[in-house]
Length: 289
Image (tube, rainbow, N blue to C red; front, side, top):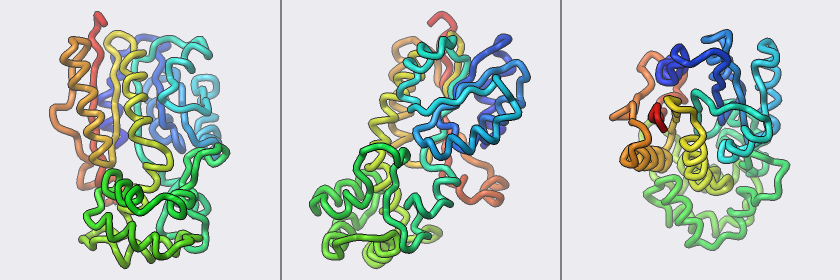
């Protein structure tokens, strides 16, 4: 949804040398489009994944000093701005979820298309956080069912959790996929293992609590009149974004720009099926804030 992101960030109205933040820079696709849109815009790109940050560094090299990349979480944005002596941003973009590069790298364990790979699923594989394999083999059945229900919205969460516990030890992506496929609810268009893999990834990376902190950080550091655009892929994310926007609007600190979430067009979904679940929401900080 590159054009929609550009439209809602509205950088055409930003002042000269304006700063825009891509808090989940990934491979740098949105970042490149933002830098191409305005030749005098500067970009700060953040990502929790040091491996994927290197892809962005290569892709954005043509922009020189206009693109500054930092290995950090968007929840740490105020501290990064202070450390780098950067001004309040005119716009912040948060493209949530997992990137295509992460999904396509089978060694990371994000995708059920893998086979013998270890289910890791950490955004920052250099950290000391628990992996998905740790959760699968050590969390009790009730906790696994909670994770699958809360983060994956799996209707048969208890059955899947029970099957995982019975299949222990879980050693590979292929083993996890097969267990999930046998016990999860089957629906049209999506693999039965999809919800299990999504839930584990969200739990491993503490994504929803991370998003709560990140929304407060972004809304709190935007320049007057600045905009926050969020691309959501899961209902739990969207609820948090919607609630955060409503709270700030009620406090008189700005206005919601999207009464309803903006969806990817049918044409884009045909070109990129992974765009199907995307929901865009946007907020503008009050000019006098």
